[in-house]
Image 1 (cartoon, rainbow over the protein chains, first blue to last red):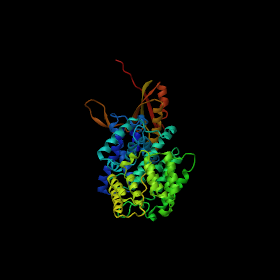
Image 2 (image 1 turned 180 degrees about the vertical axis):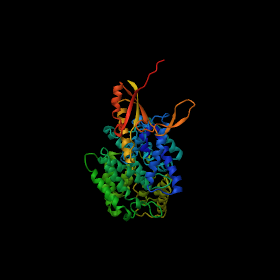
Image 3 (image 1 turned 180 degrees about the horizontal axis):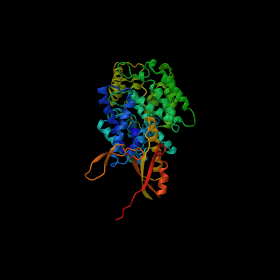
Image 4 (image 1 turned 30 degrees about the horizontal axis):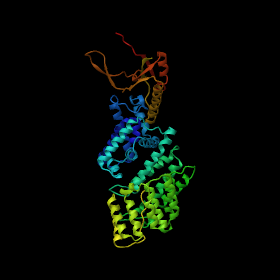
Amino acid sequence: MVAALTRVFGLHNLELAEDVVQDAFCRALEVWKLRGLPENPSAWLMKTARNRALDVLRRERTARTFAPEYGRLLETEWTLANAVQEVFDSTDVRDDQLRMMFSCCHSELPETAQVMLVLSLVGGFGVRETAAAFVSSHAAVEKRLTRAKKTLKESGLLFDIADEADFAQRLPAVQRALYLVFSEGYHGASARAVVRADLCNEAIRLTLLLAKHPLAARPSTHALLALMYLDAARLPARLDPAGNLMTLLDQDRSRWDRGMIVDGVRWLERSATGSEISRYHVEAAIAAVHARAQTIGETDWGEIVSHYDRLLAIAPSPIVALNRAIAIAQRDGPIRGLEAIDSIAKREVLDGYPFYHAARGELELRRANGAKAREHFHAAIAAARNAEERRFYESRLAACEAGTAEAAPLRRTARG
Amino acid sequence: MADYLFLYRGGQRGNSPEEGEQIMQKWMNWFKDLGASGNLKDGGQPLEDEGKVVSSKGGPVTDGPYAEAKDLVGGYTLIEAGSLDRAAELARGCPILERGGRVEVRPIMKMDM
């Protein structure tokens, strides 16, 4: 709704659009508490927001300018109601969300800010939820959002999704933002919860929106969808009933969502056209290898390593290198894995990253180097971001101390 | 370019919400065209049917306006055009004409002191 309203209010009145939507929700709370849920709650909300928008437009007519594209149409009763109704017609809503997403991924904004804006303006996340999605305080997120919105407002017009050249240029940023939203949901840094399916679902919903638009329906978008579906398929098994993190070794694969795997593979097949190989293609391919394996033992680690080789070439980063090292350890044993970790370029970046320490700890444990392993797990616990991570590393630490060098489960880390 | 007033008189309203919507859509399109051609100065407003009539200072205020539908002013719009003829031409596109109404086109007087 914010996206739709911004079309008629204009980007410079972004906060007004947010206020109107906020008001509609507040009113809903009041009225529904008294009179109960209406038959069609979303229609009720839209109608309330629309009427409020009309009030605002009438009242503010002389004080503000609105969207330049509407020009004089908003100034007279002859056309006001009609113009506002047009933006609420469902056929436009999808385009509005796309338009808003693209506007949020403004080149002048840092990536994190882009993602925050997408969550806030398109995903309907409040400040509190956005702060939960990032490792940040309410105040800090609010500040960043305000600054980001200021940049957005000053950019003038909403992104024109009909402009092919502009669209193609900004698409990678939009894909990246959605990828980050998904990642955050799959295994996030939130102190509240490590797995947040709602973020994953939102990312999938918005990426599907993207895939339906002719200009965005590219192999890279399809690959991104494949990746999301294949990884999300594992969500039901990632936490045990007690809420503890489960590794790939331990996951009850019968809880994997077979339907999502089928969909994911379909998207992967669709993405296998053209000459473009994006990082999403490679990551989806890796996810597909895991999805294929009925048990951890059947996993084709060799194939995974070669995919990581490719990924490292396309999108080099210490995190990708770490994941690759873990795959090498699975294929060739802990010593090779540790060698691979030691040769990661810019390793110092990983110091605050719990998975890094945990991986080292795990591999040292596998080669019966208990003392070193304990050291690394302590570092992992120190770097952990939430209770689930801490508990998991503590259990590994306990394994070290018990002297059990069981074929330890090696956690696939979050993406780079 | 000079300013002209369109005074809308008469014209039937829609018989159903759907018809009403269709009529509004036609007004919308006509206004968009006027805006696009640079002739729309002030969209003006539609007027309610009820009102009051003040005829003499200090005298009674009667309920109005005139009951005769064909004379009832339904609203106004201000446009800019090169000539009265041109303004009248622009008025041809008004949807009120399809509904039995008419458009009075009047040049705005420039008062020089």
